[in-house]
Length: 121
Length: 354
Image (cartoon, rainbow over all chains, first blue to last red; front, side):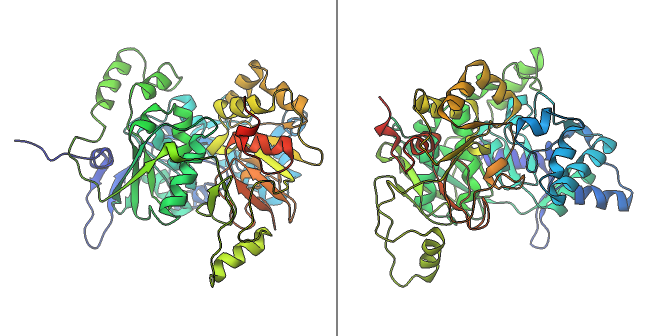
């Protein structure tokens, strides 16, 4: 029996559909890789902690910092401790974000591409 | 984030990739289904590794014709957004197809997919091929040995089947494109660099946008004075972007009064660039060679464009206040950014290329 030709998107979608969408409910899609950074994930970690939930697939989660990180070399490599103190100069919001991902991400243990890591943004 | 995923080889064809960031679409260049999610959804994925999602429609963007010298992948995607509009891809996943796309290298494909979201699309994808496999082979998180062979075999099944139908199709002739630059406050407000800003009578939104930008309808964009040049971001912060900009800047100086920031997309890009001496080209020209990050693309780390100043930026968004309160962003390619830094005004890079 000949199968209906599919687009690449449809193939990937179907391979990841845990349950299909209905008129009333969206589909449930499995995620192979979750990238997290300091701006949009600290709040999500707070919710997980409040509800006592662990990170389900630490091995499929990669964390790094990029949005609020300083770019002046002396701010990063010049003094200790690195990014958080130097980010403090950028104001409390950036500092809090960077502190939050450092405090929370390692505890929940996703792989963190740290600020001195070779592979980081 | 969007540079290190592919760089590590953790972004792979056929994967679903999400991140709490709009430009997650970048990873689609490797044949992944990749899109941005909100903070609440970040929580869902952390807790369940699943996401609730309505199935988007499909959109074939067929590109034919060879890009002319001095015209880059950035100009192509800006041209595409100019043609289909910032809402042109709404509710769709765009698949970029055609001979022109096949000829692009991975860095260029990432530039294209990165800006899918600026056309309103949920995601952008490019079918994996030999270029993709060559790029991924041997990367730290890519499959190795026998697992690699099996993965490639699986990936070869991914491209769209012959005869598959898309919900929407648009054809683009890349050979007709010029270097492109934005003049307004969304990426769809874009023109060829030799053109004039369009005139739209009785369009209050358009008028407001031009007032913010301090530009006149009908005026040429070329030779517009520039204060800041930003080379970097997940759109154009990869090694080939730095190479092409350095090619224009080698032996030249950043114009007096212009600040140029060069921000490699990752530490890996930075090291590679330094090994090639690109840092010296930028530093000798008077540009600032800095550490990697998102930087002036959105100014969250304090790298800001001062109020009222004009910035030629290789990033992806020119929204009001994106690069700082009152900052005026002109989006362009690394070549155009470099040429504009040298002249201190918006410059067609082909004038400086031999």
